[in-house]
Image (cartoon, rainbow, N blue to C red; front, side, top):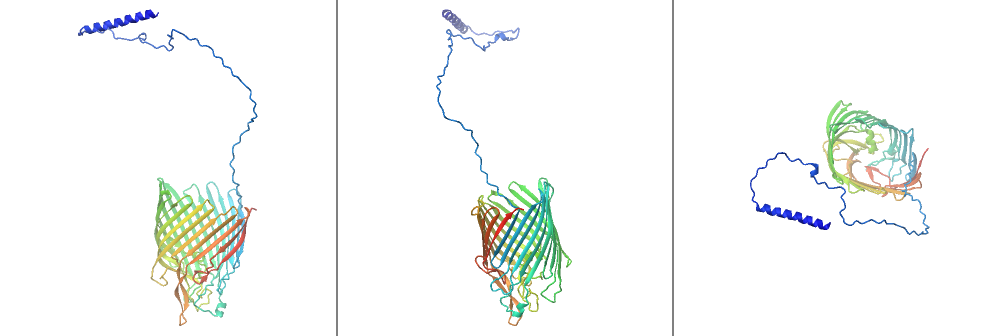
Length: 581
């Protein structure tokens, strides 16, 4: 077979070689080719590769079967598998919350502190609450001649309800306060007969009733209304009704907020320093305002563009005024939460009341002039943010303009009067136009919720209208204020806290007697003061804890108000008990 294959191959190669030589020797010429029928290939003309080619090997190998066997040797084993378990995370024990607590404490200067709070669940959505507090001292300030004790008792009842669409609450509050006009002038000598007929006690009575409604899925967001009655033991009365409503609608993907407010106050003082001045001194003011604004949110930018429109009616004098205030503010997250600059220009109309004056300075006389304060603008610029997860800050500078700003000023001594507040031992209110440049800084440190530290400081520079009587200074307004507060959860049982307040110098007028026996007043500078307070407590369990508090620990008998020194070092200890009925 191999010989025949070789001969066949030699014959084919000889034929192809001879044809190639013959084709090279013959000259090429032009020929005409006539196509009778186009070429149509068929399947038989194609060479198809077989899917299963035949083996062309001359030697075929036969596969031999392979047999496998395992040489098994038994091995003794003592291993016994156990069923695995997933590791569980130990949960902290849930702290039980109690709906009621009572606190009772006693301290120096015959101080008594009592508090009671109860929250009763009417049903799953309604609750009724009671809060009663009492704080009193029998006095005993060094070198004070008149009685200097005080009482402050307050009762609050509230009922609130909440469902999926809304929530509402109502409250009723009653309050009784007793203070004494014990701050007699140092530069005036009073006889024992005069001192014997002074009864410096002043009682304040207050009652408030009101409520608030909030809707979750409505353009009408919330509304509140309350009525307060305030009076004293010198037949002064005041009625104050306030209401607020907030609306929010979306137009073209922008929020439109609207705040509507009304503040009505009516009161009467039946006492006077001047017999020639007609009394009673009645006052009635009606203030109504609306403040629409456009809220623009763009990524890290927040802009609020608005204005306030107020109408004020002085009903007793038949005078009315119309005010327009800017309400514009903006903030931008320039560095995320680390640096957020903000700025604003805002104004407002504030209605002053006898109640607000008495809460700020309880030694005012029941002879005040009441009127609103007009603040055309408060322009401010600042920055806030978080330096880390535990450190936050806020820096702000502002310039404020106020017309008819209320300033406390010590009353003069009136020899011809027999009222208990007419011996230069009380305060009145004067109004003046004041421009204030201020700077504020604050930093808050919160470390693992066990230790919290807050520090802030404010500087004020006042520019006062020098026209009119008693208008030369910003009376009783400090140029500098600062405070430091700290709370420390020492262990699960021990806790402590402290706060320190600093108030700079203030200016006031001090009653004096001239050489010719005529009473008058001269300017006096009240010293700055530091007030350090601290507390320490121990928690026996979730229900019972004891505490100790110290106030004015530096022992400085400073004067918060001219002629009225405060108590020295005060220590109070007590206990708090939580429970359920």
